[in-house]
Amino acid sequence: MRCPFCQSLNVVVLDSRLRDEGTVVWRRRKCLSCGRRFSSREKIDLSYLVVVKKGERKEPFSREKILMGMVKSFGKRPIPEDKLEKAVDEIVQEIHKLGKSEIKTSLIGNLVLEKLRKLDLVAYIRFASVFKEFKNIETFKKELERLEKKGK
Image (tube, one colour):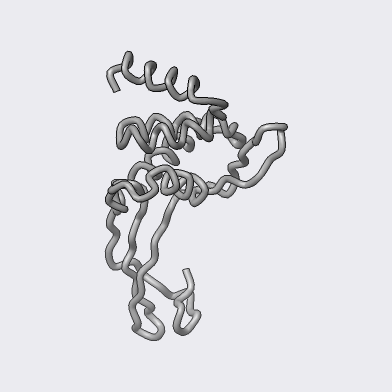
């Protein structure tokens, strides 16, 4: 890795630590040329992952889209930001474990629903109403009944 200050490649790692439940490696580095210190973070690269949308259209995977969908589902309901970030990280980890280069939006949506069901049932219903394309109040009722049978 190049030193961000002098661009030298003569850099050593002083310390490495796992962050965010092992999904990020934080490294403290020192440039042996200029003596300055800096930090770097390593995270799993998901740029290879493609999302297959309805109609077979494809687009690059976006963690931010998952996060924004969940944020919209909560609206003004209370949820700590770190709890939401953790849920998104868990979804991304589950996707990564599949080892596929293409993933359907339906699978991502179902993973989001699973997390939302555990976090907040109102947010779950809000997301489900869009994801499952509820057409009328009866569809809402059926989903609520299904939730009650499952025991939340």
